[in-house]
Length: 371
Image (cartoon, rainbow, N blue to C red; front, side, top):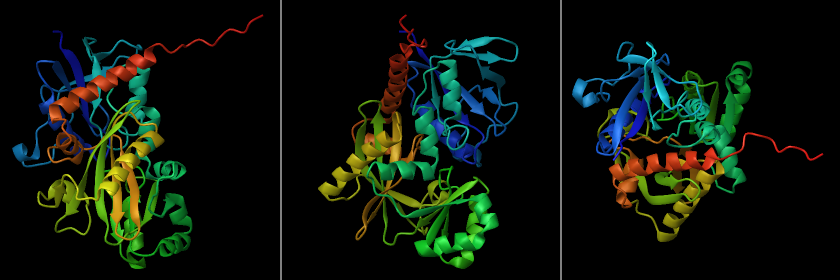
């Protein structure tokens, strides 16, 4: 049997660079070597692609967070000829690839940028297309689409950097209208990077300064009391299906922040399945698929919810390239739903190729007008 050559992209020009490397290691370890030939490609924080001799190291192996550095491997780029599916080295040598698995979190990887490049090159890739990726990266736009689809979202206000600089009093008034506490977060980043819980007006400026370190647009979001964080995984193209639901239970942290996610091994407990009433469980799954469809997603996504005793269920956000680390919710939810990690990875690769084949026959010529 001919092996499928799978290029795994990771690292990248994002504050989520290190998390991407850890996720990629889990994906590479799960790929079946009898069916796939793995081509690990690390992208530096400057955006240069390196063909690596092996997978990235884990913090447990080196004592530090991983980072793709210059000189880590041969510099390569994707061939510009549509449909060639080849990597080109500096000396002109070429190496064919069959499908790309972009394990890239944040801007320049999860936001449609890499997806657009792969579309132009005509290479199949795992996950959402350009539109779904771009919308999935923007918390503001996705929430607007959720509302249009009839999905409940937590009250929020969008703050652009120039608005904060020109009218801080007006922004403060909007925060006051939401009611403290509020959460301030970059609109186009994930992994809880830059997210700050603002308990009162005196903390607002520092929180927005932190958010604007990563994006030109920030969200102020009502801080719900007594909230439970529920997550559901979605898999598929035209007929997506939802996994069972799980719950994130932070321990020793006020909320599920970056430290609780990635630095404190005891920062949170994953409850899989989540203890939910049957009708709530079904509603989570229904809303997860509806959110997936609302942003024109494909392949995979993790949909995050807030559940409160009084206000009910809200869609928080969708993640088009969810975490794939050994403790990440997306693969764990599917494993608990009967789809083990290695089979999940193979299914995602199959979905990528299926989607590419479905698009291959589209016409590139306008229909001629009859005389």
